[in-house]
Image (tube, rainbow, N blue to C red; front, side):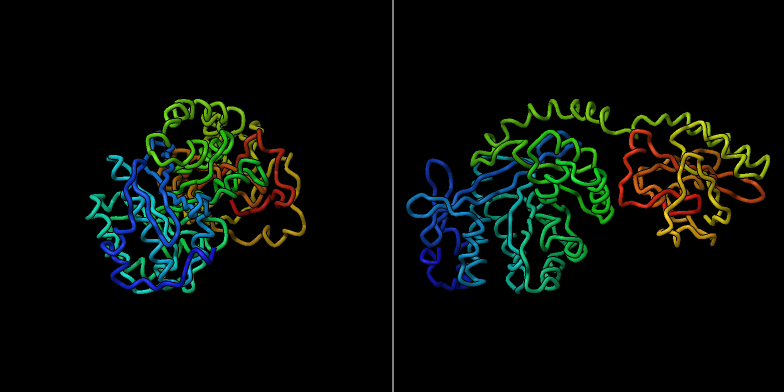
Length: 444
């Protein structure tokens, strides 16, 4: 590969748009680019919004060929660059090529995802100015551009974050690629503050094979949402992977399930209408088979919680109040707090729940617990007399997802009665390494 890439240091003028445009060549198939002895082509892969059931973007991907027509992988292509300036030049040529081919096809809506290496943000090179030039020359509005930072190490992550921050305010979006591998992790989310995070194919495949806890991908997506970013799963190849991702509330999907990348955007999207047509009916069937919590009869739980609260108000006895919920086999424990979220009485646990393991004894002390930060507590206190059912959320007491129903009422001051429920479809599938149930206050 090194023989194809002679040592060459581009000048600043050659890194501007006007200096790069001469690399582009128009033929019958569209725009190509020449770089050193290589020929570069664009292909595009659609990005689907699950909720909106339509394509909302396209990723521009580079295809390179040597002088005899043999393919050169992007990894080999970029690893063969002799200097940071070489890498910046190739990076910019690729973006020019993708925008030229994309705009020529008359795609009037949707984002264009453009890959870039994080190293290009480490220096003072005017990334914002180059994006301004691209947008103006080709007529692509900046709000339709997504700059996708590839999963590669940067010598100075802080410098990359500073350069991204310096581009504010901006219309274009920032995405982090291949989250879950190598350098694309929560530290980058924290530093870069991206608009979109792309889950790596390895996470998607692992979820599709149901390796470990099925709920883990859902918790990961939830954490990313709470950090203020949209979530895109790349490399989706099967219905099973899509169903798991839909259940996890992923925003966007991309991969062979939608279609192979092609130079023609229209051809790349040819399969999309058919797969969208069947997507939600397949998901409804999937939930009937796998999502046991969807079968919870909320009205029955609400009535039981209301009855338990009335009994507690009449007797002041939590154990007697708990008898009103034990006819529901999903009910695990009952506990009560004051208006500040403080629990001073031990939880009352269903007779079928075994005692907690001794190795977790520090979690189940008789000291006061405070649940005021929990969503179910806040929702109950905001609407006294109405049952708030929240979940699923991870329960340390059961080592699996559970729901908590909470009801705020007056009894010599504000109180909140809470009942933990575990769907019967998953009750017997607690993770073997997870903690056991507790009769005391625990993390819910």
